[in-house]
Length: 293
Image (tube, rainbow, N blue to C red; front, side, top):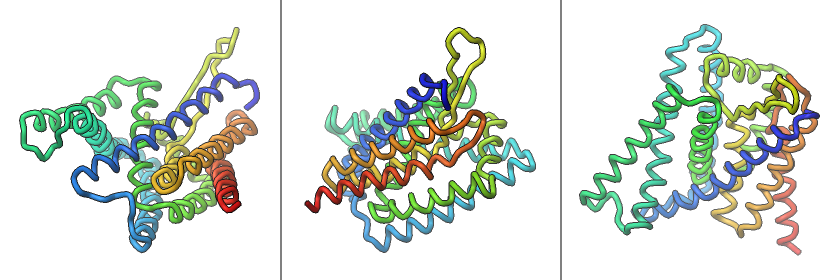
């Protein structure tokens, strides 16, 4: 993608902010739930593997459903599904953010039964509803990018808590292989990305920057999974290992994304996870090697 330094730099910045945001959100999520006596950071290994299998099946099933909806142009059905999913995720996002602010800023929780707790609950629903209305009615590309990042960091944080480290690594390897096959062999992921774009849904981060002294614009698109999946492992590491482990995995993921952005050619689709995962695991491997010395 030679000649696109501005848009590449911006995409790398958004990716970095998303990873850091996901880490912060996962920590806040654990603290909020622990306030209610719920432990969410240490699932049993058997439970984690069950969650892994369920997640992989759900991903494949969701992809198949959306491909059928795109093929037969069931716009309203797609809109309904995206609306419900986005709404539920944003509800969780604002629930954790607002509860965290209420808990650590004012010292009360939603189980207190107080007037303030009722106001907090109303604020959570109001924030989610207003965000949904903004996303589907008023937001432009940049506005949707912001809300998409909120959705991505929420999803990655929740999944990281359910899986833990080893199942997260297995998930990333599976997704990296699947991403390669779905882009270069079956090419159904290209169909999915184009279909969602044509229907007006941004299933990822879409950027376009005007080239200096020229009218035409250059752009990039990074799928939501290319943010969510790397962040899952980073979050899982942050909650269970020294911070340096998560930091190195983050740097590796960023290096992988930088590589695909540099080697990618204009107008072509690339399996970003097939680049991101090897680098992320390589840098994580370096941490474990250093820890052994």
